[in-house]
Every structure is written in C-alpha cells, then in structure tokens.
Amino acid sequence: MKVKTILVSQPEPKIENSPYFELVEKQKVKIDFRPFIHVEGVSSKDVRAQKVDLNNYSAIILTSRNSVDHFFRIAEEMRFKVPDTLKYFCLSEAVAFYLQKYVVYRKRKIYVGKRTFSELSPMIKKYKNENFLLPCSDALKPEVPEILDSLKVKWKQATFYKTVVSDLSDLKDVYYDILVFFSPSGIKSLLENFPDFEQNETRIAVFGNTTVQAAKESGLRVDIQAPTPETPSMTMALEKYIVEANKKK
Image (tube, rainbow, N blue to C red; front, top):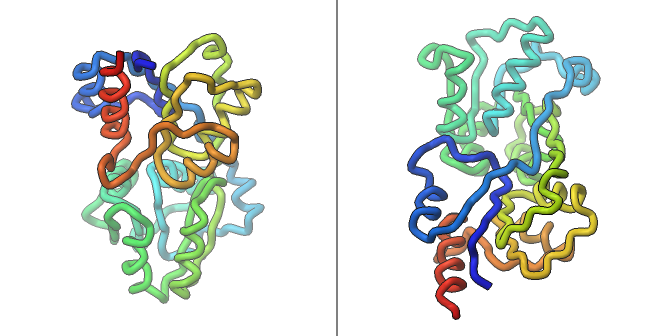
C-alpha cells in the first residue's frame, strides 16, 4: 500500500524548516497535525491538598515548558512571591530558555541538563542540602522518581497539571495511511475516541519503547518505529518507510 496521507498526533511545528515540511516536499505526501492529548492545569486548592507549601522549597525541577507555565501559574494563584534565591534545575536548554518568560535569566541560579533526566541528575546530586519540588503532570515517567530516590535528596512530587484526552470526533470518517504517536497517552486517546477502531491497512508509527509497548498491549500492529540506530528521528523513519512503500508497484 502506497503512502499518501499521514496524521501526526502533535501540534503543527512552528518552525519553517521542520523536517516534516521537508518530507512533504520530498516525498509528495500530505501531512496533517492534530494533538490527541492536551494539558489542563489543576487548581491551587488541589495543589494544597497534596500538602504543598511553596515556601518550603529552595529548588525547582522543571522537566518541560508545561511545568514552567504551571509552576508560575500556581505561584500566582497562591500569591506566592517567587524568591530570587530559588534554584532552577531544567531538563534541557529549551526548558531553561523558556524560563526567561518568567524570570530575568542572568540574575537567577539555573542549572541545565542536556536532554534526559539521568543527564540532569549529577547536578541535582551536587546540591544535596536543597529541598526540591518537582511540579509535573499526572503522567510522569516512572524513571524520574526512581532516579531522585537514588540520589538521596529531599524532594517532593506534585501534580500541577494533567494530561487529558482531546475530542477527535470530527476525525471519525477521515482515513489516513499512517498514524504517528509519541506517547502512550496518544494511543489511549485514539482508542477512547474510537473504541471500534480497526487498523486494517492503516500503518502505525510510534516513537519510544513505552509507546511501542502501549500500542502492542492495545492490540495494534506497529509498522514504523523510532528511534533506531538507522533512523534516530521519526521523520527519518517515516521517510525510509515511504520510499520503500511507494516504489512498489
């Protein structure tokens, strides 16, 4: 089966030189973007119910832009003045850069990881005397608490926002050759929106081992997988598959 249409279960990239747009030009395929999940903030009342007092923490661990937004939202709702002395431990440069939306970067103590939580952990370990708060979603990767526990630091996890299934009812009668997923939540959204979904000729592309596992546990056939040594990105995996599928007669 040739590939002509692809649905990516994420927002459309904002950068003009996205590899997805290059894929459209190069392989002459149609790619649509639609988030299958979205984030909703929890109330300050719900945060307090988790026994969180922002005054008690000297350092914040920020794993995403969402965690940045919702930490400062809750701080504002609680009328908490974020102290200049607060230390920020950011998962990546992108998260640290986004922090500038709320604080004057050069005047703050900001520590930045490379990409994964395990790469950030040595910096956290250096500051064992701090009391860390981890504002996160209800779908936090299990490896994060495991790593923090292993570091023997004082820390608390608190749900500041939740991952919610988006309404996809308008896609009921729309068919795509490939559906692309990046998280188990995306798979869950597909099956909650379309409980009678039958894969048939639809190809499923997934990124990451936990997404592969979720797809298989849901009875889906995984046709395209990334990252692999040969195709470290999803767009590379898609292109490899499309080239092979579309040259067949």
